[in-house]
Length: 203
Image (cartoon, rainbow, N blue to C red; front, side):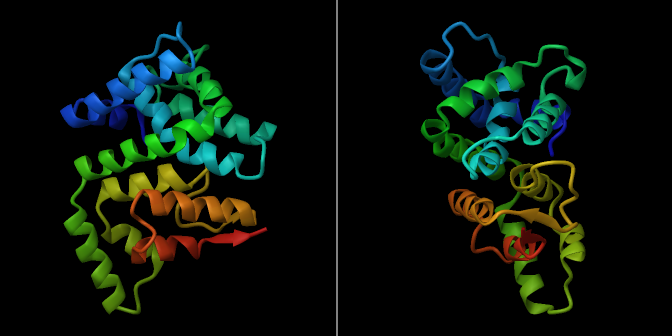
């Protein structure tokens, strides 16, 4: 997942800042008119969207899932997870209420963040190397890919405290949601994503 400092660095980039500003304005006007939330914390909320979507795939969010989501939110919020009242966790309640409306627009912003923070050309070159070398393991592929690419893959597709490399159990509908998110982010056809899928096991 992302740290508070990585979110702070991303929101400084003009294209990202503008997209987040416009999305925050639209979200607060439609969902929570009196909610005060900074661009930093709103970008953190946007980054929570994929894991919220995966958690909602079964129809509802269980208590343990809610705890994991709040913990993840607090680690990205400005000021870290020591806040007694976390603005990202508060905003996430409004996101969950009307998730279908905001899901795809927020994925578009995540895709913009990827384009702004790492080289897609470098990623594609690394993925070609994986295809050419059948001996590549997923763990080795993780070490070879750009740092921010791995951070995005972990933040987007990993719900809790699991490491990106370790085996993760998901339901069938959660797996379908993971694939849907990958499609929206332009990651589904990549060799790395296919390797990542092999670390998920249907429970």
